[in-house]
Length: 188
Image (tube, rainbow, N blue to C red; front, side, top):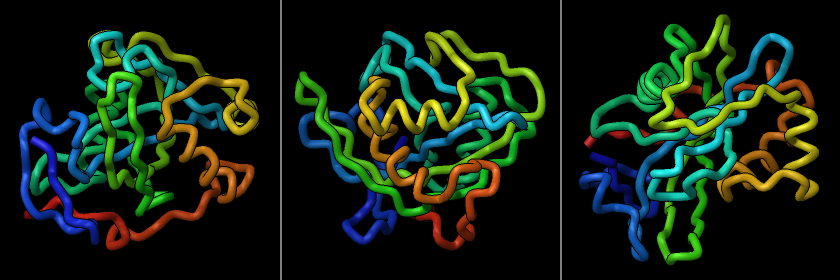
């Protein structure tokens, strides 16, 4: 189930995930997470080929949807563990009200209020091949420059997010964080 939102970002109902992403996708709550190591490298992931939206495309470390009544930060932690095997990693919101809309070549629409989180991993990862086709640890500065200059072909949300993230500073481990109250709620 995904949380549907009104135009102000307030949770109003829920719907099965399988029915939401169409050519008329309603605004719904999602999240993105950028996972870094202590060398300020970001984990870039390639989405699995069976994904409904942007299959086999390179993107940020982890994306997903909170369940109804699940705090977004808890959903990020859950997905980091499920997709990347990073139990115990604590995400922090850095772009709490990021919103985007993108249309795939087949007409499928993404329409999300998608708070962006940063997390730092302290140990190995174990990507789930059902979710992640490939991973690469790359210096943040290289990824930011490559995305902004069109050298890296990434998901549309990642491209827009990177443009906003670089405004937070050169060092991703010192980006200012938002309060939990600034992150949209999934509470119905």
